[in-house]
Image 1 (cartoon, one colour):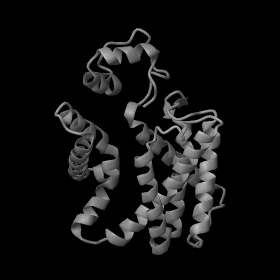
Image 2 (cartoon, rainbow, N blue to C red):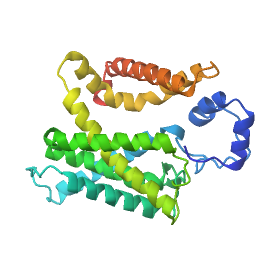
Image 3 (cartoon, rainbow, N blue to C red):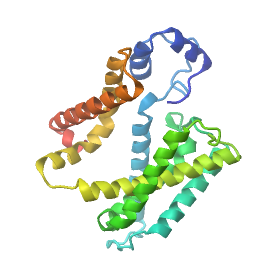
Image 4 (cartoon, helix red, strand yellow):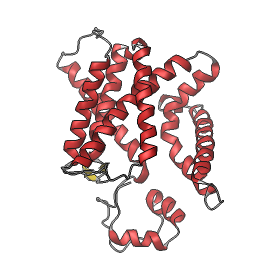
Length: 284
């Protein structure tokens, strides 16, 4: 979530955070802050729904580029099936992603948010990752790589990704060796770690799901159809579950397990019901 102004931050400490979260961020029903900027940044933003906002922006850009290619007649009606990437291509991708992430974080460290068109909230530090994987999703679909990708390659990258996760839990993301940004070794190490971990888990988990969970029964078809709706709907559901579990003496691990299980289940149930409303399936 974008950082708030100093006066707002102090008020958040004094007031009930649950009331502030649902009224001020989403509905605007709370008292107007004394330093309110009006319909402009930083007060004009979409709070924790930034990921949906960015996804819609990427989707709009995709539609514009697709239509422009058609108008210029540069889009071949036949999709050229390209060779499935292997270890070398994946290593090159991870290296390029790490380099781009490090370079942009020299000026924009992690948790630095900027406005685009005065309303689109963007964190430049993660922009290379978001833009890269959105674009790769389009490419993977067009060339059928998800279906043709070599399982052995995927298992190797999944193993590497899980080892990377284990290392992160052992060392901690706040370790001195990792830095949020700037022109220094700690920032370069964290950007490299993130870049390789993103590639490893993306390739590895997709391979695992394809090899172990792909099916054609009624349940898997329903879950697959509801997945995009869950992406849109899950945030308020998970937050509500977290508030319900607050101050109940649970450990962090216990609260995470319960919130994950209850939140995911409730999100899929809500998505299934919402998609059955008239006209909703065309959008969700």
